[in-house]
Image 1 (spheres, helix red, strand yellow):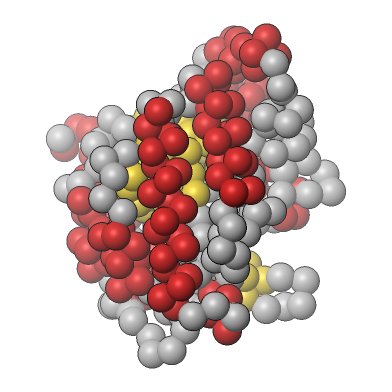
Image 2 (tube, helix red, strand yellow):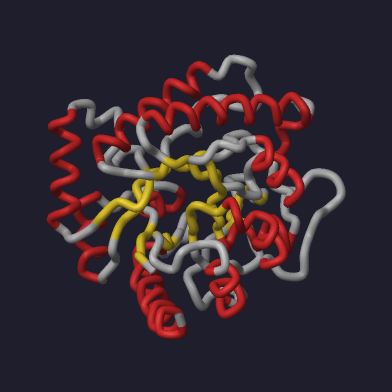
Length: 304
């Protein structure tokens, strides 16, 4: 497994007012033995708005290389755009294209998307219209990404629309682009498909998330590996927002079931990214994560 971790954990949520600067992040990940970082491309970390020239972008590439790190993917800052609640996707497409150009300049091969709006959006937009807007926009995004030789990976979350197993499969079935796939996050999968948190209408849940994994397995093109405590991160009003991401060992997931199931569909030598988004002590937990990943590597690569 090529190990990586998302830099957004150190710049949003509990770190929004005290972000860890990018150099310090690179230093720590290098020291701990990570192979890569996964870039949250928004301030104060490298992003297309702050780095507008190829020279400035190349300088970041060289900086990351100097720490012995690669970049496993990019989480583009598309959350300020509209996707479901507008018939005009031009601003979303423009922002996506800008991040594709940025990704190419940094040598990144995979760009992440989500459905932007929360599951309550169906109170404003009917399901069929919402689905069509997502499918039409992402089909176009896939074509744009393909022109840059990029893969697009969709991370479904309880905090975003289309979070039921059947809804996820509907979207995947509707977008048959070769460079489009599903980002399997073990924490989100638990909350969406075992707990059914923030699903609309009748719940669709399984006893174990591996049942959901079988549904989406052939479409997985990226993985986030992290534990789950069956709870959500809560917003300022104390309402469930999206999955909490506890470090390995502080949750309830059985990775001796999940990892072998993932290996049925996802290469062992691909990127396996840890995600500590919204975790209060993400900085301190970074070492816990790489220690766990090293143990997985020892166990499953030997067995393979």
